Amino acid sequence: MEAKELIENFKAELTCSICLGYFTDPVTTRCGHNFCKDCLLQCYEQDDATLTCPECRGVIRYSDIVLSKNLQNLSITGKILRENLLSPALLTTCDQHGEKEKLFCEQDQKLICESCLLTEEHKDHQVLPLQMAADKYKKKLQETRNMLQRKKEEFKETMKKMRKTEAYFKEDTKFYKALIRYEYNKMHEFLYNEENQHLQKLDQEIEDKVAKVEQNKAYLSQQIQHLQRKILDLEENMDKTPLEMLQDMKDILKRNEELLFQEPEIIYLTYTTYPMTALTEILKSYTADITPDPETGSLHFIMPEHFKSLKYGLDPQDQSDKEERLEYFVTMLGTQTFTSGTHYWEVDVEGQTEWILGICRDSVSKNGTHSILSADVTAIIGLKVENQILFWSPKDCFYSTPSHKVGIFLNYDEGNITFYDVKEKIILISFPNLTFGGPVRPFFSASLFNKGSTL
Image 1 (tube, rainbow, N blue to C red):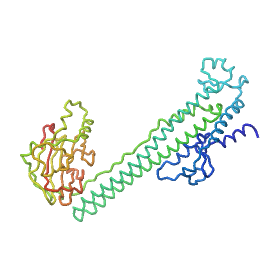
Image 2 (image 1 turned 45 degrees about the horizontal axis):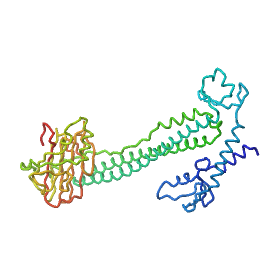
Image 3 (image 1 turned 90 degrees about the vertical axis):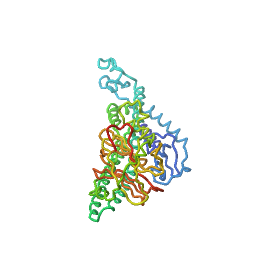
Image 4 (image 1 turned 180 degrees about the vertical axis):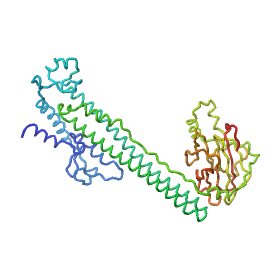
């Protein structure tokens, strides 16, 4: 058997079957197979997974993993022997001068002999000894490999985010479907068909969007595998002799450079809100005659700090009075109080850029300052941002088309208050399972800085 074949066979015995490179910190399992320690532990990525041998699929306990120092020393020796014994024998001969090609021309990315160096073709080129060139480009391959590894981790992190997003999306749509059912239960029997059609549309939308997520997850998984293969190819190439490693070096680096420009995509999931036939007509059957209480004109509500920060981030103008702008909202309470039953009223917010609507306990004083995050207050905030309205509440935050009129439905006995876009006939947000614990009153708030509009 030739020396080259013996050395290659020796290398095969010292190669990790996972990374396909010489062993690094090798460990031996109870079943007798050897792997790099990090390679084996990478197979155990999930907390609830069982660590199994990549070779025989036998169950591995951590106590069964033994570090092999002798195998580590053999790997180092084998690598040195292979580099020193095979490299000189594999030097190619220059076709033009018949000499061994011991130099590497960086401009032409090719091996040359010493006589080639004196020719006009290579006279002013940057030329390195073979081993020096191999060391230099091995570092470049290592850097590319590290970048690909980071890119792989980026794709894996995106995969995790997509799974979390998908789970949240499915849970959120369950809540939205429950709201739809609640609204249709208030309608007459002939509206049941519309309810079913509405739910079917939502189910189809959910199915289509989840299918799109699955496609994106499959693409991310494919890219992760592709990047892993490229990483393994580079690692294998780095273990080759300098001559083997430098073959097609320019194309190898170019192909991997293209992969580094790819970016993973996250699909943001939203669902459509559909108008409900006769919604406002039915709600108006519960209309309550609300009149403002003139004695509450000096009552103010304070905005939450995190909403102020959001507003400042959305406001493109550099306002010197930002700390003051959203500090107070002038508030007017309704004269009526409710202790039972169902009630509905509408508020015209056209022309308003910042407003708050909701209910509060009658215990809220007519004069003074209160936070809208108080347990005595249930409300939503409307903030005009360009051509949209940002709706905010302590439980949700979303964008919608500008609402000229907001409907408010209070079911005191069931502990529910729901807000609607009257024109579009859609639900904006609902607060179920509330405990009022006494009389409540409607209120209307507008920012001190709204101009030319009234509630």
